[in-house]
Image 1: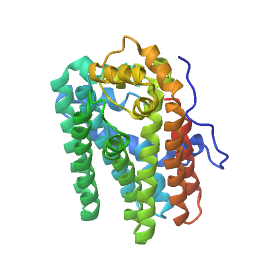
Image 2: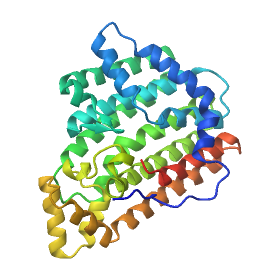
Image 3: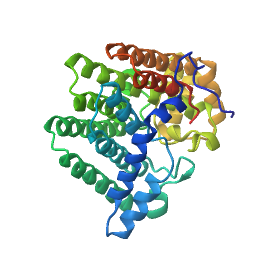
Length: 335
């Protein structure tokens, strides 16, 4: 299967590379802090943490925090440490996710659990969670701690909700959205909202940054779930059909079941129940034939447009334009 863009790019002043360039000085500090605070006298922790932290990725969540702080007019230094906290939280969830999902490939590399086993991966994930809270406490801000404590709790709820939906062909759009809100969108929203919290912006602007992050998180995850059926392993960095193999009824599959002829829908439901990939090509064809891909793309675009609209509450700035560009990137990326 060939790689395709989720949606065509929109005309915008900034592109993803421009957003990266604007955030680059701060991200260099974030990356240095991450390296410094990963250190442990337990060798296995260093090995596994280095494997996943050094495994690529664009550090999107900490970048969002830096840009949001800049767009909010923040002039201090705490945003660097807070961005590292956000990345540690995200990384710990990746370690736990891969164990729960029994994944063996992420970003084109073997997962930590495939290399070191499930027990080590879970425990190092716990280490990263606790390290993130050590860094958070050092900032000595009760609003920051409250937001991130609530966020990590919501993420855990999302993991459990997703587990309840595994191999359930009756999962509908509402149930799917409840999962991705907690698993993905809440951390995006915390990252951007906290930029405003650090800057002490008015409540309306803090809410706008939260709304931007939440809508972007929805767009990002829906687009990601579309890629599972339209990309290829070399580009996507994971095995195609992994979501189905894990029994996950993501949005393209949910939409396909709604619109497919009865016999075809029954086949798709059985695939979710069994996690069977024997007829993956036929499943992908069914998803495409029913217009499920286009319908899911349209919903992702709706959320991305809502994210950009939220930014109008902020004063014009290069950082605001960069945040808008990241909403476009969520739709255009191929991995």
